[in-house]
Image: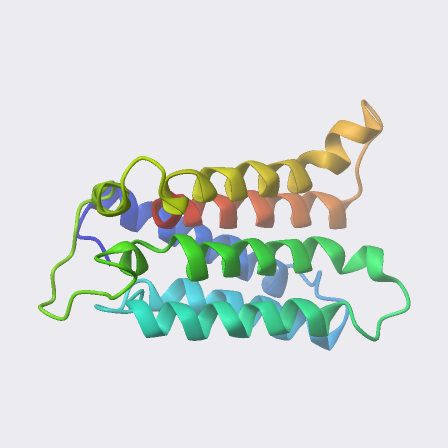
Length: 181
């Protein structure tokens, strides 16, 4: 975890966003509950020194992708779980392909405990590196998915479940900005 208070605050906001559906009673299925609990654990590991290190990011990303598939696999009403699957997938993509720990020297994290600055990982791969554009692209697509229900309905009121889902997604997106920036 970075030692910068702003980054720690953003990650904490993401942690709150991941936990929001757990405490507001919006996890209607056990699959969604487990998925949000996993997102809370992933966001919490970012506070542990070395928690966003190479192998931890890969394992967490793979688990989140597996959960995204599991959440939408056997449920008849997939519309209720699509936003959760989108959150899981976006977090997994950022952890697997954009994580700062994975960008150092050919995707091999440094072993000497070096923690680079927020944008130091962009310098490792050059201007055409996938890490320079994939992170912002994932964040923009994620924001579009989270905000689509509000934009599609216009002035029509959104229910409590929709508001909590959108707030959770926006807070998690905010928490992943330091990883994707």
